[in-house]
Length: 256
Image (cartoon, rainbow, N blue to C red; front, side, top):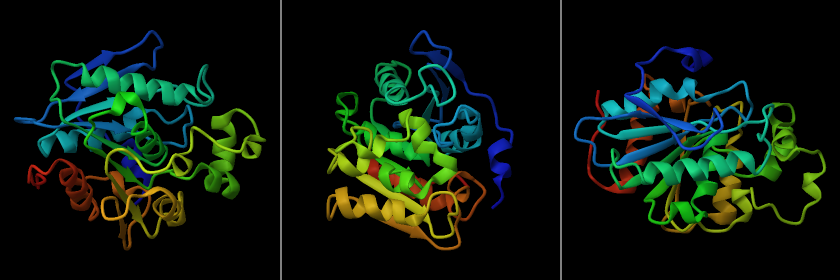
């Protein structure tokens, strides 16, 4: 699948709600028919300023069509004030707290994150704001920051996130899901074998180091790349919805 999904038009959100004073501290909402579960959808883009939440609007609308309420938060990113760590983490934590306090959204909550958003979604499970969250789905998530930094992915994206080039010298990183141990809630890790942006080995590393055996799952999809996972028209899409559904167990099926 080509990268055209990143610029594909989608229907506008039903509303946009702010959760802080910064222009990026807001989330869009799509309401599905008879929604009983809220999906907090965290976008990727290697934490870079040039990639905002708009590229996940087709996915958000498709999840709403599948019966979910969807909150798509924005956050500060590298290249803008406050965009180095911990700024992005602070923003998504505040967004999650705001979404869970939002009377217009169902209480049961599942986190879904793609690429850098997968990193943030799994990291969030360790935060107090996520107590009671049903779990997270990581879609080609950047779940091992040291590995991503060592590989130099996206021309040093982790260096930019951490605001320096010597962060690898730190003995531990509170930002790295691979170092935080088992999550309090289940994680479904989905990765395409043909991913050229974030190698499958990154997800495999998190599973080896931090997954809870018998609870968390790694789903590897053949002939699937980085962008298929966020494309509602791809062959991977039913699996994505299935993994979200597995975390809340309603038995809801995806809309065709």
